[in-house]
Image 1 (spheres, rainbow, N blue to C red):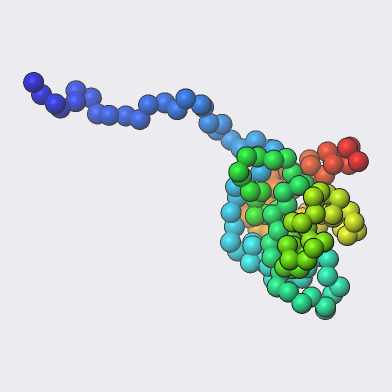
Image 2 (image 1 turned 30 degrees about the horizontal axis):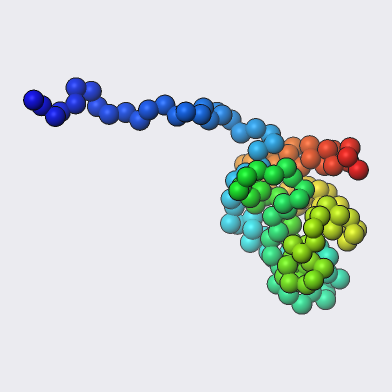
Length: 144
């Protein structure tokens, strides 16, 4: 009795078919360390110019885009916030319950900021990210 296979072993087909292309509403994960460094070099969107006391972080907006279980939004969609406004201060973004309401209270339209930042981006997925932001901006204006 021989233990040799008559045919080489091949991986079985997956139980769930994976899409061949990314959907427009799929928010990631597009990772771009260079872009995150660019965002971190920008001043905080909330601080008064010239009075920022804490380093800037790249905030991945969770409340502006539909939730995908366990998947962070693309790095191309990050916003610059200092530590204080990001998560240290009691009134910071991560301590507020509603991200969209927090941005509105600050007087900042985050979709517009993201679109203006993407105008400087050289990433190959930039056009897809712009379409994604415009789609969600329109949806947020419909519900407001």
